[in-house]
Length: 549
Image (cartoon, rainbow, N blue to C red; front, top):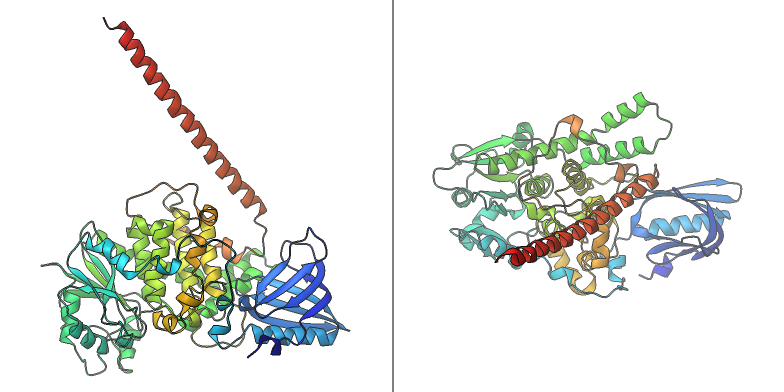
């Protein structure tokens, strides 16, 4: 298919662009295969370059021969284009609709993008499982790297290499995979060096109504326990939902077969519930005519902060089991690709100082989201504005980043990265020139040959010129476990995401710049103090030598 077939009118003059925080500007609108571009004849005016993949929905309206297209973006921005001529307006609208909903992944922009920067690091090879395993193997010899899933046959949503107990062979892993939903057998997610406890993750066991069991599964899970220790099974579904799953062939671990494990149910919502919550929240944030009561009731009705609280509470529970109880943990819901990953990731941010650094957080995203099989292609296909709802869209990754922001806000000196880093990751998950978030698992990414045909996001982010934008000036390495408050009073609406197109951040940005300047000035003064102290010490030494007989 040629893009030209979808572009009915490639160019229109005298189009007026309205967008947040900028004055209206008139210019020429051009459509390419991947971008909507508005170029003004005024040299000083910034052009608009908008990826079609960032467009969530469009509305059209007409007054006489003047047409207006309202473009609603996946990053919650709303843009208005006033187009002279009804036919041109209809053609542009239908072209945008076609180009923003391409069926084939290989027609998306990452396959056509060619970087204009020097590639210093190949991001596709920055966070390989072998490198992550080396970090564990220096601390323990009880785990091994298994290539049982080398051809993606055992589990289509797992990577080729996974970390499992050394005492469990590959044949046993194949049997366990047959007993777990989607073949997602328990694998190592995190090793706590302080006491040797671990977090594992998987999908639900296929116990069914007959209470089916698997000896190899029991052996694998018990292999994570130290002698005389108990473990915790954290199920991210309510007990009733887990019991209902048995009727469909799923279920949960029976106490009789897993006597050393205590099961805890912590209900975390999924799918359409989260999608509806996001829609309500964005709607409330976009409405400018609220009185206080209406705003607060709409915010409460969205339930968004309740979902944030549920996820953070469960992550804190998992971290407490590891660090305070000295007990290992297995976490799963139904598939183990959504709420499970939210909890395992956040628990590591609480427990592991490395996850709070820029490269450590990138490694976490790779390991616990991309390689672990979170279906980005499905979950991020649409955002808060699209009316044609599919059942698999959900802001799972956005909720995770919101939770990270809540912890960052409570511990502003413990994170190497800043809020802009989180916002950048969210934007690229929904629409990007890089191939990192394409596909829904490693198997799909291999078939698409992303490593050879697209550029990795990390190749761009990890250049010094970009890293400086995402570095937190307040950062001071903190080797301790951090315990965020999950009290309702401690949780706030993430204005940097949900209100950034409704309220100018000009004064906040100015305050941030002033803070950076103060910190830089402080460092300069500290350096001068150190030089003066050295000079003083040298003078005192010289005086002492002169005075000695």
